[in-house]
Length: 552
Image 1 (spheres, rainbow, N blue to C red):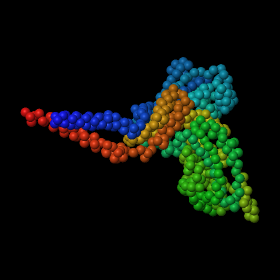
Image 2: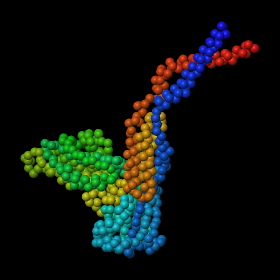
Image 3: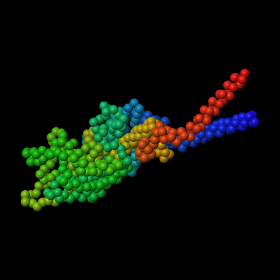
Image 4: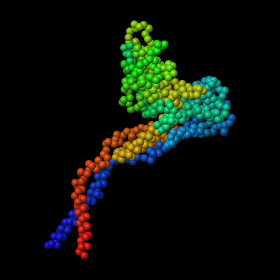
């Protein structure tokens, strides 16, 4: 009976040991992996190596240039007979990690019969219009027509005529070296310069190497908002009427239609009453007028900007163009430059912000004239100033050109075709650098904080941005400016979508230590019996191993 009881007790203990081991095995083999899998942070794979390589990827800007010699303009020291090709390269140093190389692929040839007939025109403008259908119209490409040194097509004292499109007339030089220097100067004016590229990459260039105007032009953006504001601080004296809608349709719309390739534009207008300047003008007895000096102009913008309210809810940069009609007690009002001379346009512009024009109202002939005076704004004069300021905001200035250059007026379009290319070159390079910086910052953030969820759509945007940047760089290397710019815009869009995705908010997720603090009160009551049973099994096993030794 005793032996049977002992056997039954041993069987019960063995069954308890097997049950405890089974529970422990299920908890370790199934429970822990299932819990870890269901509570882990999902992180889709990202191309970290490709993102790191974007900042070190060399960029090559290829400009196809056709140099066409008219009869009597071919230098005698050409290296080979026409036609032939040549390549000129120049490295633009940005920093230790970023390098940009400009490559001008020169194709030299003689004029065709049609081109000779076009160059026989009376003026350079007529020749440029006749040559237009015979040229390569692809964006980024240039055509240089070399005319004889004695040609009357170019005015006296003019060596280069730059038309509205993508061609120029160049007066022949005495030797090939001098002609090469002249052609290099023209191609850089019509495409890009080292200064314009470093300005586009100003965030990566040390301040000591930047020109004073490098950060004056607008940063590249997918869109811009233009606001025209009429400031009437004295509505009791002046009833100002401006046809802003008609002026925008007539003067601004043709310019924005051409700039629509660069970005999206929206235009609005407003009239602000009792909006005064934040500076009290100085009265000048000699001219019986009020003056705004150059050093006081920076203090004008902040008080006025507080009344505009246009940039508060804007997703894109806002360009402000203000027409200020001085109050009667401060009329007439004139702006003076740093030298104390009056500004001809009576206007000034602020980089990356906009411009302000002061519009004086003629005093009534009779002091007993009824108030308010009706004022019709000359919108042609106003828009001429505002469009000139818009060009300056985009970095399109013609003041730095050599005196022997003659540039054709762009007309109603506001900018020539080659000036549009100038913008595209700079914005494409800037977009590539912006995407590289955005993706690098995103990769560093996600690598540093491991509990942020990386969804599949975020990862797909990152992959799309990397691929678009690589496409843009490849298109630049073969001279396809339009395709490169479109790819860079797609890269900016994808990178911003990924960077600003709401799912990447760190505060939405718990750190690992908080996760354990939450789950331990749940798992500990279940784990304690299993751990105690395992400890008992270990003790009994050790005791059984010692019993035979005692018996001997």
